Image (cartoon, rainbow over all chains, first blue to last red; front, side):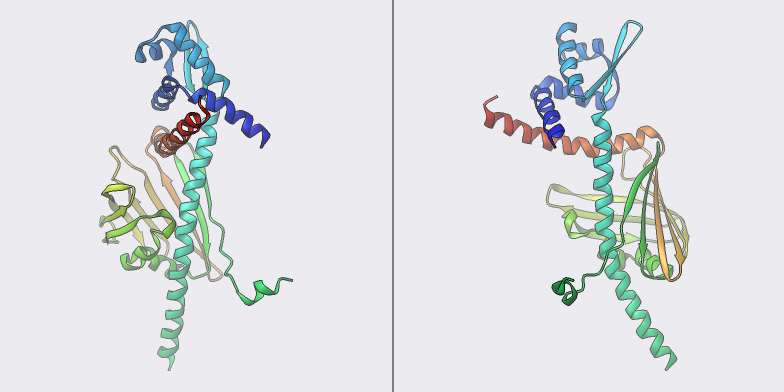
Length: 120
Length: 170
């Protein structure tokens, strides 16, 4: 829990800026270099580097330098999103199946009655 | 012993499992305390399907539910949801319908090729193991489905965050 709130603080700080939120949406679509991002958001390379640095600190973005290009992608927290999404998906199906249980139970009862009357 | 619990029998629900089994596949499993023919019937008769496909918790309700459950038959489910002005339609066609054991259908509401869903019903000792597989055309397609779902959640988080920051005077 402590770890969670510390991370949350970092996330809050990282997400408090509209450009940084835009960068996350952008990286959700595809990986991009700092140069791409700077162009996209009409800012200097240095300005974008700072933003990416804050996002990286919060674990929201991961970067990797290949040759002279630093490529940015969504960070490890993306995995948590996937886990959360699968859990939501599971819960949807679990509640569907709980309703399905009721239908199945009713059909079972009907079959019993029907089966009995057939024998008679 | 809890006496109150005894007086009010709550049926024990079988657990539902969900996992991403590969780059492009999601699998959901659940056991039902009934023979396969009964579970299969509840999946293949639109009138029965309608009764469980939209649990209360999801907030949506059926406007129509049409399904020609046979190979190459089409289905179209139309829902209303309070969060959406326009009705939502989910549609596709059945690729395979094997009584009591297997259903395969396409999901065509998305812009590009959607996932193919395969449901198998495996009976053992009067109970049925149901396995549902959603196979996406590519890793990117599944990632996209997850991202669009979590992006929707993210927007909400951002709104809450904005409120939080405003309240804090940041």
